[in-house]
Length: 124
Image 1 (cartoon, helix red, strand yellow):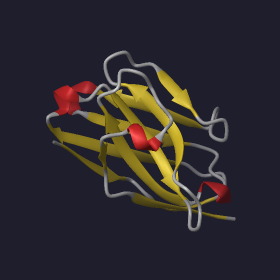
Image 2 (tube, one colour):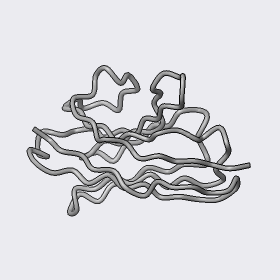
Image 3 (tube, one colour):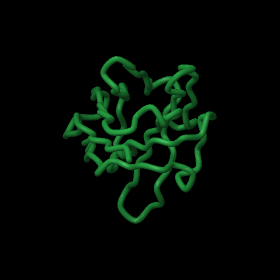
Image 4 (spheres, one colour):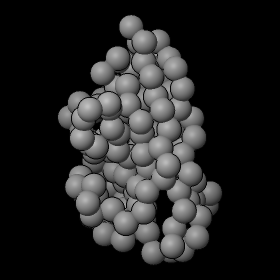
């Protein structure tokens, strides 16, 4: 099993920045890809960004490309999501996820482990 704990959410004004962290513990050696997803009220969970744990390859949803940046610190078993130029449309609960898949995948159903989520609210 892998446990994921997110932190760093909060309330920020439009145009501001936040950095989310996701600390992984347990059988982290089985993890090959980490991802960030988000879910707004009444909406489906959507892919935001992903990173290969060993390769460092990244992928982003078009809606956040150029504004968000995903990175990882293998020594700390932690993945980060730096969010800049935040917009009210970014308001959602953000979830960290992990999968044994080697490729950075966008489908939430293919992720094996999930964190509890952290709320991000962007005011206009």
